[in-house]
Length: 414
Ligand code: URA
Image (cartoon, rainbow, N blue to C red):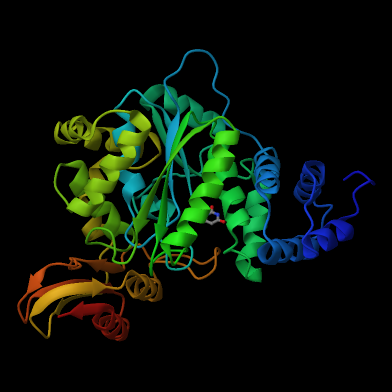
């Protein structure tokens, strides 16, 4: 960091609610990436941003500085449109697993860089790693070569990819500074922009199972992300989707892959399919009925098998996941009353899956691929007493008992 920038003064400037200049933000992030700005200073800065917010120009500068902190995809010569999606996270949200191979069947390249589950929301990388042998730690070079071969790569953030975000996220995670709109915007958009995209669709969730609890908060986050994306020349579209009940019928790593395979074979829950089609349409510009035909043709499941085998997995094991990851206790939960399901609280279901071991409270925690729920009932369904409302996959009777209590609390029937 140049001597001109005195880190404590930058922290104080933000703490007092003043606007930082682009160069100040860039120097701060450069210094932090090199290790010259201490974690304690960066944590204080994050807390100042949490309380004071950032202007649109500051948020764009922060995003750009984080993007510049590492390597990025560099596409040369003629190539298809480079596209991706991002979801702010939900319960049972497995759209990426299906959308990536679908879009790769549509003359687009999709270099999908995803995250791990954190808190109650699941992560694409954990789900993919429930496939034996699947390797998510691709280098940018490897991913570029894979794009040329099969038009899609599904990978995690490497040490070289937005390292400033990786370091800052780890600090935010333990300092109560995750839920800040400018920090979330810069974190998400720096990674997506490092993919050098032409088009991006953002699925911004709100509700009990999402970061943003209200639609109004989700709109503010969506607007902030769109502004940054457009400033960087990316065609960004958004969707605001409620996350008040789990998406589809399954929550948990291997269980969500199994459900995604169903959709890729032309079956599976309608709410999940609807999100896949609407988001894929926005980035491929191909109408939904044609996208559906691609799924029904078998091309998408074949593309997914190619991803698995290119990334070290055994695609033959895909259809044996329920045996490979079988929890010790699988319990059917039956309704104690008849009536219409009016709510199945996604926040409670997500918390329960987390406690079963499907998610992680801290980014360094391991996850259990086998546990979670399937056959989750949907709102609007008319039930008779004794109908199945969910199946619990747990590693002990006591864990299943606790999950049973939580699911009954999450379910409203009237
Ligand atoms: N996902 C990210 O990658 N970063 C955030 O800050 C929040 C969600």
